Amino acid sequence: MLGLALLAAGLLVLTGLDKRAETLLVDASPDWLTALTTRF
Image 1 (spheres, rainbow, N blue to C red):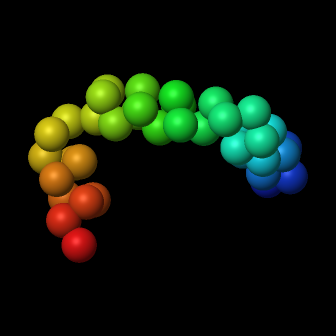
Image 2: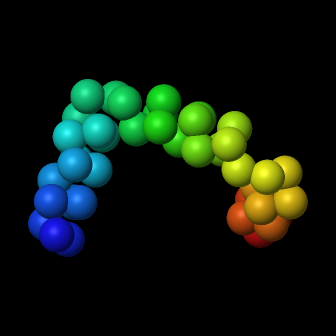
């Protein structure tokens, strides 16, 4: 399972889709969570 997750992440990075996924996740997360994780 870990190997498949790493392979999927690698494919996302190679295709450039990781940025789109990141944008979707940040937009879907609550503001307090984004503020907490980007504070430092």
